[in-house]
Length: 174
Image (cartoon, rainbow, N blue to C red; front, side):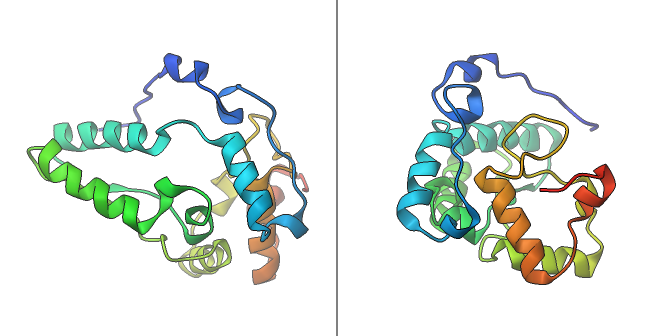
């Protein structure tokens, strides 16, 4: 199986800044650990049942092509504000898949207990192509540098003490 694009035009009409239903929240790097601010930010970017929908589509594809695993990038920082990024969510979704698929595929979230900095460190250790990864909520050619996702990525690379390879590749800075 090659790359598959699945259009979900109905989803663009849902509320949430990520689907065009509002402005993206802007916070400062100093506010990343303020639970009240990040909860408010999460509510603004929340797309109803997003990971339920995406993992269900993944389950259908996995079952059709007889794959055992659906791999996600859920991490500990996102789990702090998004209930559909938690170990409990993955465990319960896997339980549902036992009844919802004939092949018993499952969700695997290898990063779920890691911070973004831990992920960057591990990725650098194994040569992950960070220059091709993307975190920005904006749909622009250069990361905005001000959305919460950009700020978390920036902080992770700063904690590890290396330049972000994506920014090196595109000649941008955030």
